[in-house]
Length: 261
Image (cartoon, rainbow, N blue to C red; front, side, top):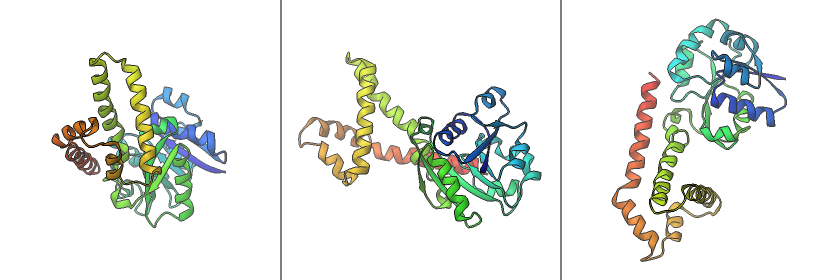
């Protein structure tokens, strides 16, 4: 039975543990968190320290804040071996950073998850390099896919992908807020508007992935000439919505590079 240890049992770490419990019965899960309450709630064998996790487990999932990861890696360095496989969900952290704080040839799988993973509906980007075997990488991918989907991307694009799936839920929520605020300002129940908009998001997502149509064609399909949708789209184009989205993505990426230093 494979042994997978978690360093960090917060929202994302706990979500992955939950997914493993539902879908992967052949994995023994261990966990450590400096917060006793989080550790007590973890669906895992509890460890007394980060070092114990590493000494017991071949696979070590790093689920701490990026700002403290360096300190954690420095602490566990004596227990890291050439057989250890790190699975990092720390945003903006590169494989070079992890190796600089552990061993030069450390095996690293990088993952950019998102918060819908907490409901089993995650969308994660995943990557590695040639130091990790195909078998080890597929193990890590199966772990992440236990609570959603995972797409393989080049390892040198892990910072650029953050805005696409990691940060974008917050952007979508802000977009949704505008529609809900408008509904309430016009005497429509906010909860009803939220349910309608959320269902529309799900349906639109299905259209994007299952209809076979391009984004431009899908927009055109909804937009009758001279109709209400065109009137609204004109305002969004006037406000340069797509330019603002790109600017937000660029800001995310710049911050990711800053955090990786």
